[in-house]
Amino acid sequence: METSKSEINKQLWREELRKSAKNSQRVKRERVIMPEQAPIERASNNKEVNLGLNIEQAVAEAFRCLDCLDPTCIKGCPVNVDIPKFIKHIEARQFMAAAKTIKETNSLPAVCGRVCPQEIQCELNCFYTQKLKKPAVAIGYLERFAADYERESDEKINPQINVSNGIKMAIVGSGPAGLAAAGDLIKHGYDVTVFEALHEIGGVLKYGIPDFRLPNTVVDFEIDNLRKMGVLFETNFLVGKTSDFDTLRDEGYKAFFISSGAGLPNFMNIPGENSTGVFSANEYLTRVNLMGAASPHSDTPVLFGHNVAVIGGGNTAMDSVRTAKRLGAKRAMIIYRRSIDEMPARIEEIHHAQMEGIEFMCLHNPIEYLTDENGRVNRMKVQKMKLEKPDESGRRRPVAIEGSEFIIDVDMVIVSIGVSPNPLIAKVLPSLKITARETIIVNPETMQTSIPDIFAGGDIVRGGATVILAMGDGRLAAAGMHKYAEKYGLNSK
Image (cartoon, rainbow, N blue to C red):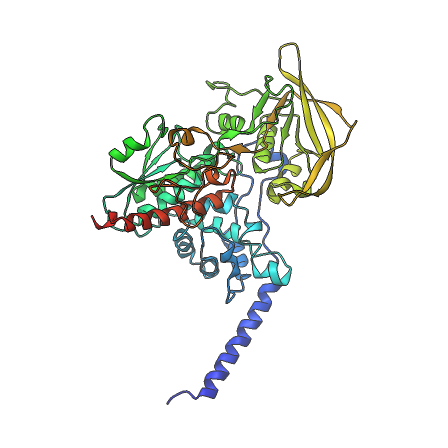
């Protein structure tokens, strides 16, 4: 007996009522709070601050997702993770299925779950935030949970990979953009080699982000997954010096993705900046994170400071000042020329720094570094600032207050005011079109440069970007390289 149209409508109506009632329960749930180390403990160790969700916390948070018909959260994700799908898997306790869903578009889920600024991306676009004015579903926490569950389980997810087509693709730089591109290209069946100038794979994930925020073991696991998929890695290989692009072309590489980052630190060019004890954040973090400089047996030991000032307000500045605190600084401070509301660092990182005893001197700017008789910085002249109308960045413009200068004691300064691309690539590729800031000009849809077989993305294009934006560039570039190969018939071989 066929079900009448009216009966079908009644069933649909009942289902909508059940869904409405369930969503009402979801909305009433409070957002999960991430467990973390106590501030007094973590400020003296290098263990991860955030401890991750347990199963019951993750399932309860996943239950909050409203399963929207138009999932705007996905629109805020630069790598297009199917967020509602993986969250619903967690709600159903299908944790490996959740991890598999994420890894369809994200090669580094455990990394992104820790360091991506979800609060200004997917979570900002969550229905809770946009329509209900309530805390968003903790998408980042849930992504981390799913990725960690896979890493800690005996079962591992193997993405589907096409049969090798024998076409060689080269990635220059093993940071997040390069790793994302490698993951997508290997799935298409290309033979992918990643060339890294340093002795370890991972780029900024290894040298720039401390263990207390992103453990090396997590990065290594993600890289090992790419190795198992077939990606090859060459370390201590500086493209442009170890070998040039023409030589690599002769070796059979058909296209290149430049993702060598922006490792050239910016400075303020103020008196005393070349003094002993004044570091760039890049040098300081690289030596501590990658070269073991904090060890008394290190070949490249770093100075230890009791009164450490970090200049800047971004995530790198927070990483630097919190590292200095962990290395014994009695007074570790952020010097920032705008107010705390204009800081580009993640709110979570600012909050963690404050809880760990970091001093914030906002609306101050250094104008001179003074030294002792040995040439080591021992004082810093700072000037008070005030904010006026917003500048081109959208933040209020800082202006110096005349006659407000004063001296503070410092014995180490870390400058973290941004980075620029290394000029090597532009020097070895004179026909490559670049901007006045020496960033590479690309087609934003394909990431193709002015040289047809060369693509680029990440910081070397943006001048400074988050991990997830760099990964988004990597995925776009991989798609662009795939289309390039198809256009010129490379895939027909």
